[in-house]
Structures are given as structure tokens and as C-alpha cells.
Length: 116
Image 1 (cartoon, rainbow, N blue to C red):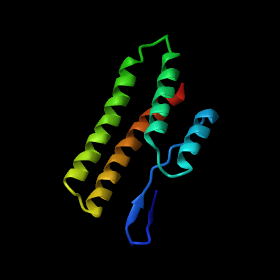
Image 2 (cartoon, helix red, strand yellow):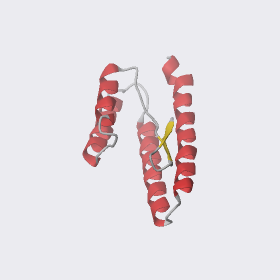
Image 3 (cartoon, rainbow, N blue to C red):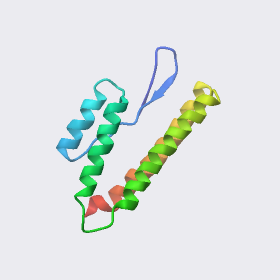
Image 4 (cartoon, one colour):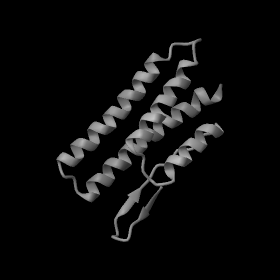
């Protein structure tokens, strides 16, 4: 999940893959340059919303709202970390903590909806 850089720092990375080949191809294209520019990010969000809109049998608005809230919370954390000038070690601790939370979210998906 992480690697030691040339400067001796430990860089962590969380990689997402999908069992849906079209989405996985999409994600690999974004991974190609190891960063997601705003245009790509908005395209991914729009595509996610389009797919969610096809689900009409159950209420999915809360799911969309939760996803937006999660992303906005991560953006706020990143901004606060920059403003507080966290050390490299503190930034790594923050990223590790958030990756654990995201692992919890993915495990929740795997133990519920993925089993349908």
C-alpha cells in the first residue's frame, strides 16, 4: 500500500479497482499519470450520478448525498492540513487514518450490496 521515496519518506497510495470492466478501464486511465485533475474528477462524479439515476426501484438520494459529504469532508481535511502546515509524518498519519476509514466503507459494500 505504500512505498519509500528517494527522500526516505513513506508515500501511501490507495488503489481502486472494479469488477465492472468499463469502470475499471475508466479508473486505470485516471491512474496512468498518478493524479486526477479536476476535469477527470468531475467526469467521474457525473458518471457515478448517471449510473445511480438508473436505479429507480429504491431511493438512492441518500447514497449520493453521503458520497458528496464524504468527498467534501476529505477536501476540508486536506485544506485544514495545508493551513496547519502538518509535518510529513503528520500528513502520513492522516492519510493512513482516512485509508482505514475508506477500507471500512469498502468492506461495508462487500458485506452488503456486493453480495446481492
